[in-house]
Image (cartoon, rainbow, N blue to C red; front, side, top):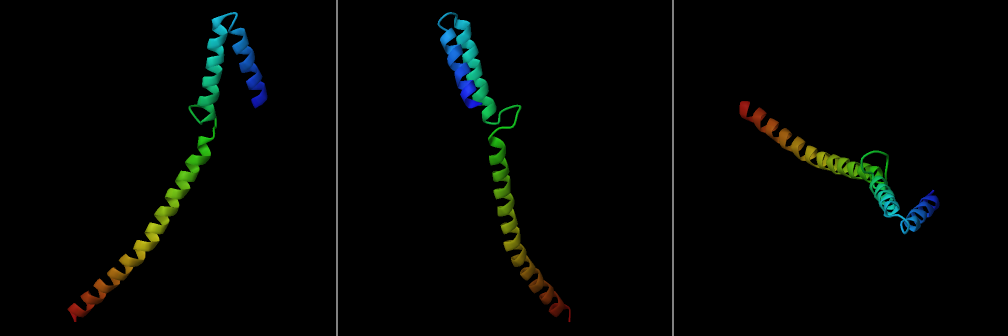
Length: 89
């Protein structure tokens, strides 16, 4: 597929010597390939995998944070409950 697009681009560039409008068409083709190839508007591009990777990294960091501080808070809550029970006796 990439080879066919490269050949089309070369043909459009070659025809540009006859009429500058073909160079515009070649430029639009390059723009479309770059824009849609990077996951721009429309179509599925390479960016979708990295977006999921970023989301997965964020989710993992959040889970580690929650596990770490949940243990600390639980210990603090238990100490406070123990103090409250001792205080009410």
